[in-house]
Length: 119
Image (tube, rainbow, N blue to C red; front, side, top):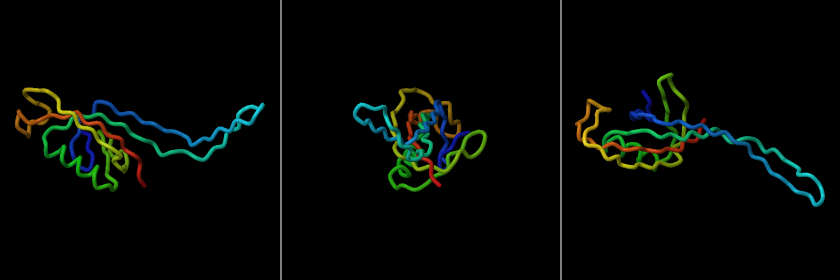
């Protein structure tokens, strides 16, 4: 089971991006010169289903107030992350079956997150 700060997620896609900070100088008539300034912490892009307005509001809240939150998966804790941004699109469905503990007519959202690694 996937969770972000204890809120259940049904992850559909998990993408990790790692980049370097490089500067490229181009002197006249010479080859490029590269300067390395370190690397950027990994960024996780997550697409997941979230069931119910309460869970969506909880995720909106932590996105708005800042802070660092635990992102966990089936194998255990992935890490501590800042939620950079969140988009929630309501999915058209007549009966949700992902969360049997909630009503069958509970709204379902496809939520996209960008998580930045914290320390």
